[in-house]
Amino acid sequence: MSKKKEDLSVDAFEYAAPQNLQDAVALLAEASGEARPLAGGTDLIAQMKENRRSPSLVVDVKKIPELNVLSYEAGLRIGAAVSCTQIAEFEPVRVHYPALAEACALIGSYQIQNRAALGGNFCNAAPSADAVPPAIAYGAALVIAGPNGQREIPAEDFFVGPGQTVLEKGEVLVEIVLPSPPPHSGAAYLRFIPREEMDIAVAGVGSFVQLSPDARTCGQARIVLAAVAPTPVRAKEAEAFLTGRALDETTLAQAGELASQAASPISDVRGSAAYRIELVKVLTRRTLGMALERARG
Amino acid sequence: MRQAIELNVNGEPHDALVDSRETLLDTLRYKLGHMGPKEGCGNGNCGACTVVLNGAVVNACLVFAVEAAGADVTTVEGVAAEGNLHPVQQAFIEHGALQCGFCTPGFIMSAKALLERNPNPSEPEIRLAISGNLCRCTGYDKIVRAIQAASQALSQTA
Ligand SMILES: Cc1cc2nc3c(=O)[nH]c(=O)nc-3n(C[C@H](O)[C@H](O)[C@H](O)COP(=O)(O)OP(=O)(O)OC[C@H]3O[C@@H](n4cnc5c(N)ncnc54)[C@H](O)[C@@H]3O)c2cc1C
Ligand code: FES
Ligand code: FES
Image: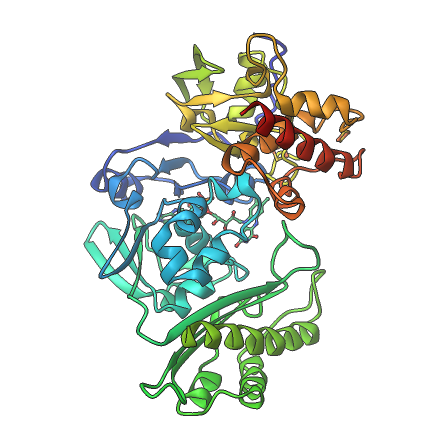
């Protein structure tokens, strides 16, 4: 018992670590003050230390079996509490969803990835969240449990604004579900940061391409932009433009131009709005090129 | 809220009464006397607080002690076996990979974890593995050389 440090700048809170989903939902739904789920804590604990969040109840969701699922059968199921390290090391993710594995391995450091959950990356709802664009590009859906049962929504409909999601009081994100990648498809995620690691994206782009059955043109594309709008956004005009076209360099560059029109970035210390627009063009072109290579196998 | 927890630190069981606000780092340092892990930033950026929690390196400043109830924790104090320095520790000394030493316990934990998953890392792999650890003194180069030397020493004893 050496020199006790009594600098508890965090506001007092109750802590619970329920073993099942029903209990977690009940605790969150019945709480009188602000109640927050806790996954890896790499966002929440940092925010609590800065008094940006002061929940009076913290519900640790890491002991709930449904939130620890990680399986690949008819698609990929990732429990909302599964860590980025577990995801990036899971063989089916490396083989079938390399863009997601790469994004999980970009988040912070090894120390962070060992704690940070994909569910936390979603629920923190930072516009710069790195694992979100590839998940949406692969066509992810989110399973949400609440006092009125479960619901499933497309992942791209989850975000309302910076730090805000559609989750209602008492609701918990249970799992992220990705469909099996169709034949002749591929995806990639790239972000730009001014250093090599440990920084927040100035801009990021996740792209998915599925080739037509004869492999000559683009059958379907999804392009998701990060850190250039209040939420992650799809560049639907660029996606529509690509559909049915032969994917040569010029077409990919044109898609980049169109994608940049879906961006509504702010200027901040990380970069000006104009710079972010340029980044979206370049990152879209590059990720489409990488996705195309993967689609061609 | 206070809660009694058990913690296994460096192989020894401990009981502690912790406040829910208390981080694992605070408990280790101020309740259990393990002063190896340090608080640099308190927000996951510097890695001075790095410990192994149930087999994985984590920032102890971003874990509430209550979350670690029942867990196995290794701090830098638990790295030397039977009074013999671990090859990573030995290499840090021989290669002058520290000056003030504040960051060293964190680097040792990250380096040891790296060599356990990847006994022969390339230089980029080493630099990636220590990207969550900041050092204000050495300029990193001697740390990288020390980890390379530890990798060689370990492969010779293996
Ligand atoms: C040093 C450092 C570097 C970082 N680098 C990156 C980076 O490069 N890229 C990046 O994208 N992020 C980065 N982050 C942010 C963070 O690590 C990620 O967003 C991470 O995925 C959050 O996951 P978590 O499990 O730690 O979330 P937590 O902190 O546990 O939770 C985040 C939020 O989600 C809520 N929540 C968690 N789980 C659920 C659930 N199941 N249902 C409902 N709500 C839930 C919590 O209440 C909280 O509001 C970094 C953070 C740090 C400290
Ligand atoms: S004190 Fe924990 S990362 Fe800096
Ligand atoms: S030796 Fe001083 S911070 Fe690294």
